[in-house]
Length: 472
Image 1 (spheres, rainbow, N blue to C red):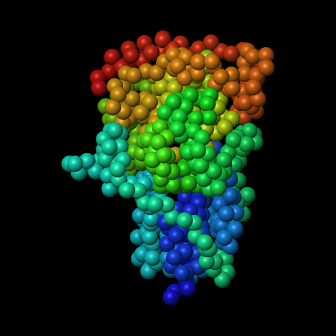
Image 2: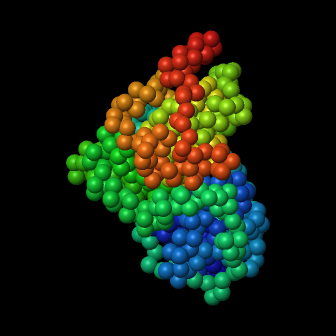
Image 3: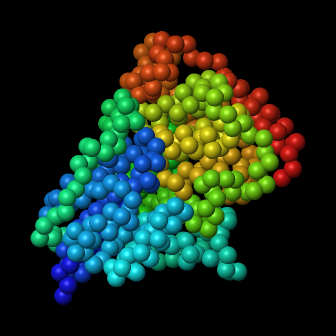
């Protein structure tokens, strides 16, 4: 049996359990060298996701060390780094979990080809998705463009049972050199915001499993209702951990199935949310322009504002639009690194419809600010809200942020949690917003709360008028 090592190249899969690539490497009987590479895909991350990645890598290295292993960190072009490690260690195989964005596919395809040509086994594995995008087809052989038929197709499919974490990870006789994580300065762009967001992070695989267990035990039964109430702890919160693969969708799916079998009413809705994530990846794989351009090309002619320097865009970014639901949701993001899903729909609708600003402005801002940033979900969410994406509902749907607040935050608990101006005793979370945002904004809790940039009714009428004057 070969004693040459297997390099396991980790990316957005920072876990030990239910990891097919790691499982196969350990089963090979050869030494395993876990590797993470700081390449252009890492360098291009926004401030919050890059900082969160740094925390995840530190935690994952600690988990590996508990198994007698470690995470080798290298910086540079991924192929060059892997070739260098192969030369140093004598490795004859490189395993990794698949990614599905177009840049990752291009990179990984070239790496697989180059390694195989050099006589190195190069193998990619599933794990980031439950259903590989090329395996879900319509009856005519195309891909699904609407969510509900997609759900109906996959809801009864078998999903592989999660794999256990390896009992041991065979170590090489000697370890190759590794960069120091601190030298990468992955949190530099977060500045003072890091200290504010850090208490809200649920870091690593163990925390993710605990989060899933608590959700299934305490929340999922009422999930149909609580998931829409931003002031209530009524969601799983797992987007943070799924984004870096600290938990697998398979693990979440099987937990949801068990809850459904136990008669917990909200379990099926949770399963549908997992499939919504799959649908986003399905679309990104088949129509990669989802990330960069209007998914519906007939929106290319719509005259969205694309100037980020406008005062209303700045007010939206600051969470000072004068619309309480919008502002509370934006401030939640600055303090916690995440935003309630109902809030995401409201702030996206307000930017793209009330302010008639291009969805790319919001997409890029979220890419910089969310610790649970995910390329497919972020892009589909923004295009869905803007009307240019895969939404079966007519594009002229415009959320009213005032009536939405009346419906989902009747007693204004969410507003009080996140908005300090005009209150005698603001909450700690509302005050934390002023510690998290850039100093250059010059904001203070003593400021007056602003008048609306665009009132709810006025913005709706303006949006509808703009739609009526365009041909779709």
